[in-house]
Length: 456
Ligand SMILES: Cc1ncc(COP(=O)(O)O)c(C=O)c1O
Image (cartoon, rainbow, N blue to C red; front, side, top):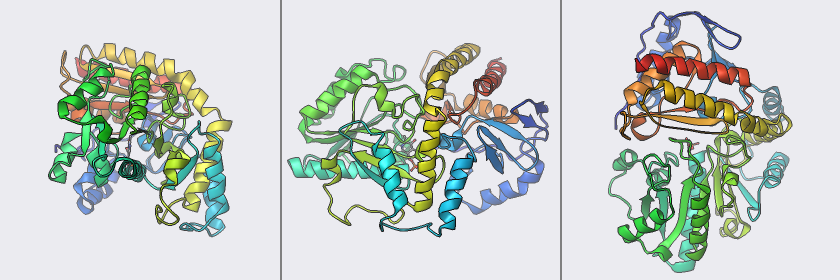
């Protein structure tokens, strides 16, 4: 698998001084180089892929270093800090719980766990009723796979264990999650393919032009998958690499298909939930409710917490003590998550994401024009967008171009994480949900300028 790193060589760049951005040093900052080099030497190479900005502090949609540089954050880390960096209410919640002396409680009951469960349950559409708190998104998707297999076994015996996911999907980096993902490069490391994990094309309209549900059924037939042997179908509501929601008609047909074949419909909402798309859950755009949803990232605003949401019937399959985790509902993380949910609601962050949806769409369209044919696809919903750089007229990714755009944006005070998706050709735009229209426009115009320059 190809890996890339940004060079640790300071480059003299033009100074930037705006209301939201400051760049007053070479990038990377010369004084930061020893620490960046130390990390590269001390950690696995896999940790080295992000732009060489030494994060020091954060406030709202701004991230700063120790040398006075400030970036508009279009990353939210990696779609995590929904309510912004350093929100005083989340800081107070974390501090309060730590001062109470409760930074761990295992599965012993706590008031904060009950409060968070209640707050989450109050936001669930029926028939989703139970909340199981975990730590990472991968743990949540793995739990969904396990529940689907367990139910399949109960209903149809060992043959009902085929688990369907989609091409290019990302569900995390633990073994089951990686098997379930649709990125071939990640699976080749895992040894012999597990035939019970089957990928079908995701209806994104770019790499898969025919977005009708027929493709799902014909693909299974071609692969020789017997529908009644399927225990579950899991998809991101929008794929991380393309920010295109599953088409509602497709999702509704999938819901009917899952009902007909007693397979669970599962959405991986690790990126989509808690307002990112302008609704609480991204599946609410699709007029369907899944049997299970895996959540993480934006649930807590930053602390490691994830959740599986499911129907009572499914979530109660395991008996007391049979489905637990050491750090489930960690009290500090739970306090942060509760505060985060309150902030999302009281500050109208979901509404802000919906309000800024047309601004992001218009900006993405301008960037596509500036790219002069080198953007294969460009999509946006709420406050998430993906720009997929590709060789003109093809779906072949252009990772060099995407990496150059990220590098130049960072040099100008716009923070993006490294390109993702097929061949590393996609740039994601995903600021904290409280970003102002002015700052969003400012960041988009930086991107437009850089894309224009690199198209010349
Ligand atoms: C859609 C999706 N699912 C699952 C995961 C895995 O989450 P985590 O990295 O917290 O394990 C990610 C992480 O990027 C994701 O984007």
